[in-house]
Image (cartoon, rainbow, N blue to C red; front, side, top):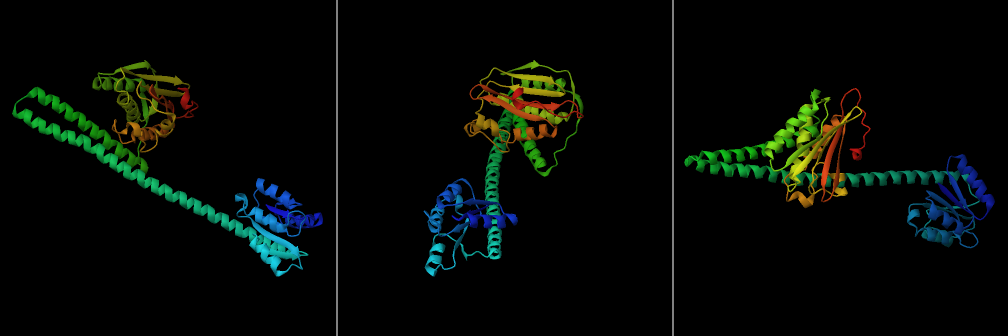
Length: 381
């Protein structure tokens, strides 16, 4: 937008008419004081400013404008009588003007200058946008590099932990075998098996991340009994974790069209996390429910919970809650993979949690691939 500032109404009318005829948006002010008020509220590409005005003259207006952050990139063209001397012109440039036009105004010259300033403004704006985008991209490369380095460090540590345990238990097994202590051998073999399983799960997560990044995470969808899968997982988890009572609150007798192995992966992740992050809890609750054509599933624990800030980021790749990272192992990719799996089933995933009271992780997916619209909000489960 262009602002014309002149105390002569006839000058404003003629300039405004010409500029609008050439598709420029125009605003006007009949005094320096009025111009300053408008500049405080609006942004202008160009100000055509008369020098000789009662009250504040054009130079005073230009000097005042130079202190406004809103107008720091606004170009100023001074209008002055043809008799203006060199000192007056010099003063105009020193007060912030970029060009000078003598009255009576040659409309063709004015239009040429206005178009030039507009072109410079557009080029400057495009350059600024490119610089901003480039800075953001550089910061994103830096953040991605930081996260990658952090992940490699965490992954190395997490993989090293079960490997160290396996090595230690094997050494103990050798001693037990030498003593022919079969019972101790069984116990230590069981511990080795647990560490191997941890290692297997870590490697599986790393492979899944690689497949997600390369777009090669495959799904084999078919119909299966959902409740049968849940009961089977709950039974195995209960045997592996006798210290926690796994309570199935609700059941659904329904077939679902999905990748059974991947849905099992999500449920196991939910239940494993519920047990891990609620070490002092005596029970966790599992619930399934039908809502229209959608299946809703949740796992609720009564453990440490998390703040709203962490709930917003918990499904982000490599995200780990700093306060718990030293206490609980993990790569920070399990829930990210779960989210990818559920979203690839046209579903939604979420968490409800209260700090110090526990968390409830849940997902909703369509039963039937022909009716895949999910209308249930995350916080409705």
